[in-house]
Length: 475
Image (cartoon, rainbow, N blue to C red; front, side):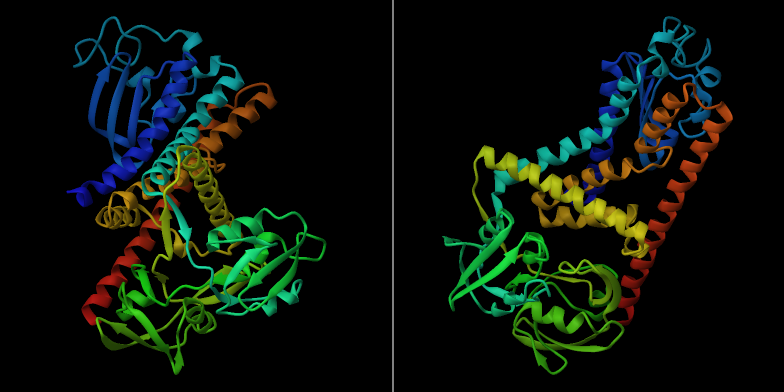
């Protein structure tokens, strides 16, 4: 039952919280809000309470809070009709002779119009939805950290080393080494090691291993940053499959969760880093895999797909081979207190937002392929999969999607919050509002842009689903 309801819970909650932010801000600033809608277009369900009508609409592309505005007619084609001309009339079901338009004959007082408020109040209303989404993600991630503990990479064993040209001494570190201390301070886990390296002032870092000490410059001119240093060293991960992406080369070839990679070609594979070293340069090449599955050896042939990826050390974008599989989760959980859980929630929200911003930037600069965009079908599939994995995965997906909605709503597309913020600031600088025709054209452009993104992401979903069907039919 949870798997069936998961898409509604995930998407519905995230959109509801976003629009609730706008609604609460409108109420706090005294703006009349006659409609609170989840979805666009014709209403499937509506219920009026007080001066607001609550609507569930046919097109699940988001939602909106209708506010009293001088520009009511320009937004009518998106938000279900103009209140002034399409409001209820005497004799209509739901007509209230004591109510303001659109539910009755009373005009909306000018001091309750959106435009009557100061720029600061209007910006507060527009940014409130994004704020609520960030708050939802923070609360969920904080709760998860408190309930399940903080993820910790328990190993201290090095999996692979890719020394940057700016730190050749890092080559002294080898796969299989165990890092036992950073600048003389003992470390128990890889997570603790990474935290210590990340917090080091510019200078040098001394990594003590079971074989000796390695001194590496960090943060100084000509030296790698702490993040570049951490990106150059991987921790050991066993070559066990933890996830296979739908429609991926691995999925089509029959690779399964739980498989242990034994060989690729004629090369034995003993770590995930070795798997990556063999797959990365082999885009478009048939690679014979031998995997251990339930005590038996199974042979597969996988053709890695070419994918653009930024090198974590050099920062350069390059084409690499990917099979669409992830390693089994190497983390364990350690119980933490309320204070640390709050820090973990804030850190997780910040990191997630940063990754989404990076993805958007990558799409704009073409470092990330548009084929990686997922739409409503992908969200539905991810929701069902998360629900089947358990409540923790479902809640994490809610937090991830909530941050996605927050970041994407700040894009400068007219019908999104970011676009509306720019329009209001531009009008304030100009000293007068744009004409009705200009506003309507701007909104139409925004709607077309959103629909194009929706069509593109849905097309990607359909192609991925078709590939899955073909793989199941023809193996």
